[in-house]
Image 1: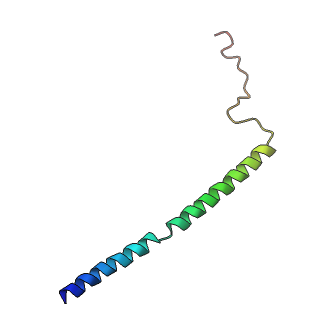
Image 2: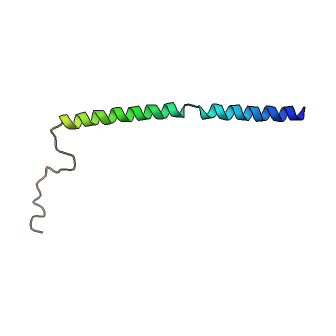
Image 3: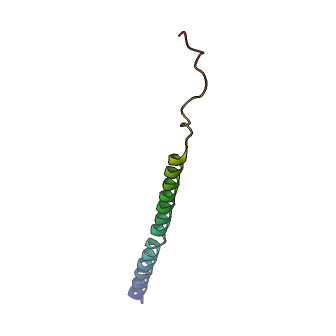
Length: 68
């Protein structure tokens, strides 16, 4: 009876670890990758259509430190 219990515990742990390994991590990663690709494509299209200067570019006059 004792070896049967041991075998049952080992089988249960093996099956549960295999089930955990297929827990959907690959699907979640694929969804994140698809969302990232979609976002990057949208960003690139928006950048091509945009005529605004980049945010880092300042529109203010730089007369404060003209004589420095």
